[in-house]
Length: 170
Image (cartoon, rainbow, N blue to C red):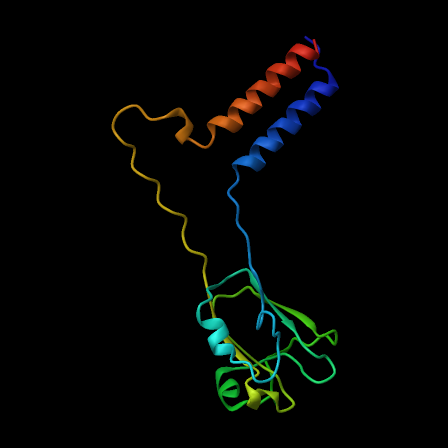
């Protein structure tokens, strides 16, 4: 039996599609600091951050007036005293739209220098590891429904596509 190149490509496409469908979705969050108010003076960022869960892999997106403000990462002591003399990292790019990756599980401290920290432009976030996946439910007694398994439909589509490819490319 000679295998047609179109059939090989068709089978490969179906298998890749089936793998994509079966992979669980993992998504990072891009947090716009201050939401609609952005990185601005007289905003309480402690209140803004208190109901949010920052996960390793998320990003902070700072939007601000690039001619007046900046985004500095500092240690806890400099955060508490609004000291911008020795930042750990200056995230200011000059565009007023800075993205900070939260790629380490730890506490992060951000301030705006030039005196704006004293007006409330400071943010502390605690970054956590993602939660573990939910535990599998125990199998109930009796006959389980065939549709309870999430692999059945993608496998059925893959088998159907292979069967169709074999019939049409003979």
